[in-house]
Image (cartoon, rainbow over all chains, first blue to last red; front, top):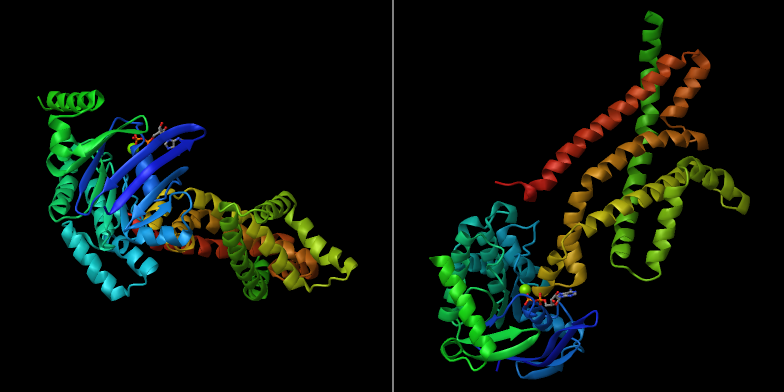
Length: 252
Length: 222
Ligand SMILES: Nc1ncnc2c1ncn2[C@@H]1O[C@H](COP(=O)(O)OP(=O)(O)O)[C@@H](O)[C@H]1O
Ligand SMILES: [Mg+2]
């Protein structure tokens, strides 16, 4: 296992948002977290990258186990150097170009020299099809392009895993395809990904594992095809079916 | 009429000279100090550093809540009573720096708070520290936001330096008063000194426009 979470609990103002969540991701996994709005998916990802501090639970990463709420600043930074995060609303650095966004972490956090960082950055931008836009600022790019820059920024760090929090939810429908396309390719290249999304078709065809969450709990997790064809829990079946039906209705 | 013209032309360099040697240095030095004070204090309040935040709040409260003229008098005429003697020019620099620093601090703090928290989170996720994100991402964006109000403060300050005449700094206004005392031509001379202030602030307005253009490269749509 590359990454394993055990017994993660998190409350906001006395209200428990995550209840004893267990989750594991293996190298090469494209795991998708599904669940209704408010299920705690974002909070879970944020706890997994320490943007929120979990109340309790432990994390095992690269064979080392730590308490989630007792990591030192340095441990968190080391961990973040090996992981990457793609936000729903991109969060590109507004004052840097596309290339600047990709190289910022390399130069500032890792001390990579500028020339090497530039090469790595251009390589990452090429990977998402945006080498031509290297000198543009975020505001000069479409939402889809901004999200691809954000993915390039994630890739540049050569992370062991990338977390995606609804990467296409802030996009106009006609722009989701280009982002999903890039992610599809990353999955086929073996990049380890943990993805929160509402894109059922993407989940069904790209992921190898599905984690279904509701009300702060993992209801069921398993291999993708089994989850869609033979879910063990009624709630899972209902959710996968209704959302699929909604999608089918939308398409007709 | 020609007398008035002659007086105007003759006094022009006499008034302009202290403008160049006093008003501008006083403004420039004080504003530079004010910016340093503003950025440091605003970052501390933004980060809610305990104790320091309360001290800074008190400082801002006092310097924004009392007249500049009173502050000048306290420092220049008042402090000697407790053995602190400061020459006119440095006294003016101290008061203008602290006064302007208090106003600019609030401007910078508001600009910092306008930067979305996602900028920090993105920085953390690529392994940057709080101070790295602050220095490279958040502060530059905040300074861009703060640039127009800070420019306005600077322009106000050029004019406010005329108050330094009251603590015997021989800046433009004091020199003008002296010439008036000799020539009894208050109308011409006070309009004249006003005109020179106007030239200074207009020049700064142009600098402001130029600066805004340069700083806003990342805001333009293309
Ligand atoms: N910073 C926060 N403060 C208080 N409540 C929060 C915060 N973030 C999330 N929540 C609450 O936690 C619950 C789960 O939210 P979230 O993780 O965003 O769910 P999801 O991403 O699955 O839609 C929601 O009820 C939400 O209101
Ligand atoms: Mg969410």
